[in-house]
Amino acid sequence: MSDHQFGKVRFICGKNGGKYPYNHSLYFQGEKIRAVLDPASSRQKMLGLKDEGVDEVWLSHWHEDHIHYMNLFESSDVRISERDFPPLTDLDTFLDWYGIEDPAGRGYWKKEMVETFDFRPRKTARFFRDDELIDLGGLTVQVIPTPGHTPGHLSFYVPEEGLLFVGDYDLTSFGPWYGDVASSIEETIASISKLKAIPARRWVAAHNEGLFETPPGALWDAYENVIYERQEKLMKTLDRPKTLDEICAAWIIYGRPREPKQFFEFNEKVMIGKHLEYSLRRGDIVLKDKTYKKV
Ligand SMILES: [Zn+2]
Image (cartoon, rainbow, N blue to C red; front, side, top):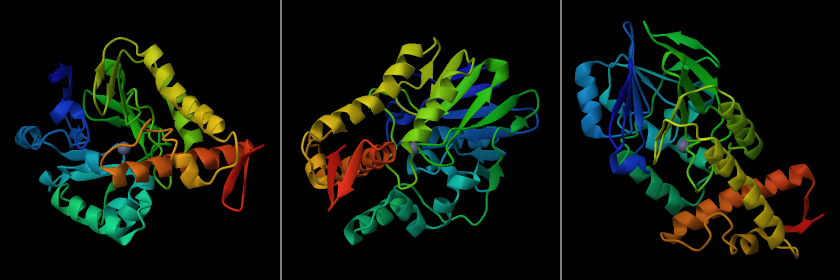
């Protein structure tokens, strides 16, 4: 996979195929404003962009694998949705938003955030307005709110190039991620529907395959269906009442136990927690004495 130029927009391929902890970036080369979106693709490529000129750093959302290398652009304005800004202001808030409670986990992630991701608390940012149309000079970008993955997750559409950046609605076979404290399954489903309806010609996802130049119609369906498949498996697992730990032992999200155990057990639990909340809201299950039961 390599970088691609589409008019005044450049697709910048991330290291390691854009797999975590990297992502694919976009570089908008307006005549008035030049902006890099999600600068976590590669330190070397970001240093190259800095030489070309970067007026603004744009972030699709607050996750560490999207904000990495933003501090290389010290003199550039940072823009993000106001809804996703709090975790960038303070490391404890950052971990709270992930729902990491145990002291050992917090200690590990604090060190990791500072040493690997160069986390530095920010006092200010400029906020995108939902649905704002930004004129960069000979290039326009529309801000599209797509909450669910995070409350302030943004997608971006460039009408001149028919290019849609879908961020972490990344069309991977793993399916959508909604494991943060403020993630939402309902909003994820609504955001996928919204993205599907945009008449784009090119799609850029933040991870893995990254660039799609033919309509990813079936891929969108498969991606959304992962949510319903997880839900169906959960209902099957609840053939008899179970506690959260018993449900997690079925490994509905990851399919099987994986290493590092601590990391995957935590993620399995938070994603299952979201499905249980979703099922409770739908009235499919009830919770009594820490046990979930099908209605
Ligand atoms: Zn993310």
